[in-house]
Image (cartoon, rainbow, N blue to C red; front, side, top):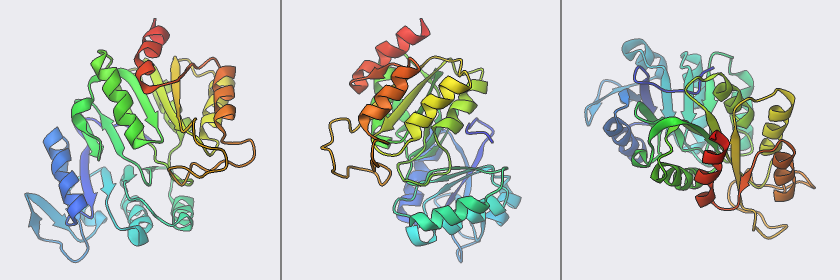
Length: 289
């Protein structure tokens, strides 16, 4: 299941007639994404700011050839929107919506088949710089290149990419996997995809406290011989112990999910961890050298 976009990707927006959906649809189109329409039940047949609106995803896919969907549907209905996109045969479903009940996503992800990749929820989306943007990322800070990036944090993504771009380091594809405890795509999935991608020479892993996703990534690097250089950054390292911070996924259980456990995991597999986002470019340059 591909995490990538290219100039042939045809994107639809579920929830396109809502304020947020329409705003970001226009931003995606302005970036150069082939945004072929959107979905709002009951409003099919309309045209909104040049976008064709369909009643359902299956109709939109049949009439436009869409293979990517970006979801801006309110939380109570967003998991069903994910299921609808998967049932319609959309290969890449990117759920931007924040605040979806955890049990709704557990139910949805449990029944989605292997032909659909879900990114998110509560994520900023995916961008292949110079080709297409599907989500809410600020496209102007990205630059085409050969460094992949995977992040749990949208804000940290933009800051780190800005540092990379200003230092002449372009990006192959950047994936915001989201900060919820239950998400469709994790670090391990993206690392496996970047390992196979001839356009990616190195990877930046942007993690944060809570959960075990970073430790799982380190285990993959160790056990399966990830061959490309990687560097990392862990957000929330200065958070007070015992205090819940940021994303719903930033929950520490015992010794799992602590900054110390993540730093130790990356140290074990010789992945350098930046103390500050501004340190990332120099670490990437050293890794590539």
